[in-house]
Length: 130
Image 1 (cartoon, rainbow, N blue to C red):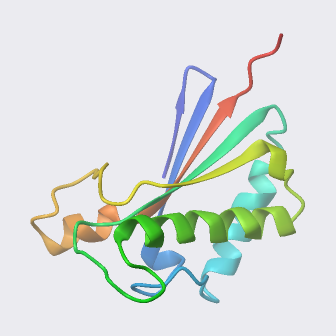
Image 2 (image 1 turned 90 degrees about the horizontal axis):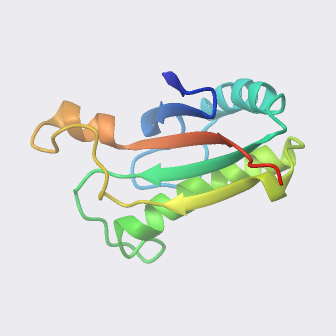
């Protein structure tokens, strides 16, 4: 899903289930075509900063690799940024941020809501000139 606001910002949300296995920041095979399409589209927006934010639900994680949802969400955002950089998108135009479970779009009280909160969000913002 995407949304354009005032011609200056474009918002795109991709459900995490389309990109990662649960509890992982490694891109799945199914993620490749999705991210290839996004990379191709985003390559046309050379005047935009691409802010990539990983989001989780409020179920805590605690593994050696991901001691908390902060590390998981950050790892996912960084994995996507690296994919885009490998596809030729200028790394100077991108940021990766982990947002943990702090910005839910839906209630975490239901399985569906938690699923929708696990996402990677892209905010393309037109850079200010001068």
